[in-house]
Image 1 (cartoon, rainbow, N blue to C red):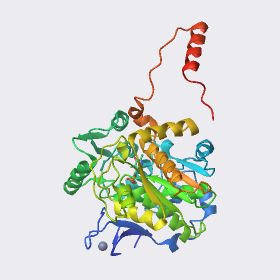
Image 2 (image 1 turned 135 degrees about the vertical axis):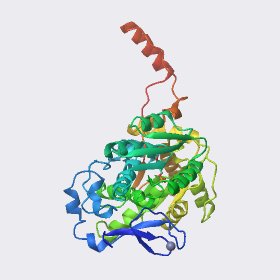
Image 3 (image 1 turned 45 degrees about the horizontal axis):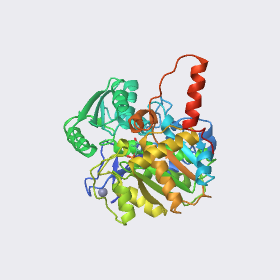
Length: 418
Ligand SMILES: *Cc1c(COP(=O)(O)O)cnc(C)c1O
Ligand SMILES: [Zn+2]
């Protein structure tokens, strides 16, 4: 092969070179990128990586982009922060938050997958990029297409949050709202991809896109001081992210950048759309598709493309999956904000609520190192909190008015403490 990476069938192993393709014609299984790890062993070292700028391109050898690619956007390398106050609340002292709520440029982990997919969209000569999206992917494609000077066609279910719609249109992307759920949108997009020569980041470019998710795993390992955690809790929509964090850890182990260690992967879904967590809990190997009905719109995929592999990743690691109701999601969003000052969207509420359940079940041990993947920003899903806070009455700009206001407010709700 001319590059050190290429497509390979996940089941029969047939190699397909590099082209816009997602499934193997021989056995219809999905394709995944495979690397010639020996070819990068000398340059992909802790020391060299440390000297590179703090963005996801510091892991370029393990991303499917041409070696001479000149990265433009500083995507990724979001903070991994300790979460001591949440940890105290749960009696789990070694808790970390990987905070992609502040990912550049569009405030979700989807910026990572799009950064990689657009490089290949260019390489393959697409002038139009496109996606089916539950919201964050729409924002990420629209923003990065604008920066790259590509036109973008974005397809979404019609019921998305207002901020995700404005946060797509503002970049000049063409936004198509579909009367239907994500799975119907995605089916339409597959038909469009057959008819038009467009680069659909999560359809014909999907294997390249998916590799971008690995950078969450690379960063967690590097930010822990080139060490793997005991547990990772990951929200699941299509089920790709969780499998790619595992792939990232395995590649680091194989290249000797971290010590080999068994990391347990825990998947998190919303109860109203839980095809993957349900399969794990019921001991099934395959997904039963569901009709989504959840506040967590970014995770509302009833027939997840990588569900089968997500189940495998969770099981083989010794992990588990759980799901959270709408009320639990909202409570968990507030808990993370109040305890750690991190405002996450509904998907992050799913992660936090599920982590709490897994600790209570004893599936996550409190003394272990656990990383919660917070994948999106709360300002995009303020609708979820609409019932939580009543608009306070405005007062006159006078000290006396403030003092009577304060007395009333403190009587109604004493100062929160530990
Ligand atoms: C897309 C998305 C996910 C899940 O990603 P998959 O790889 O499809 O499982 C998680 N969180 C947020 C905020 C997302 O937008
Ligand atoms: Zn095959």
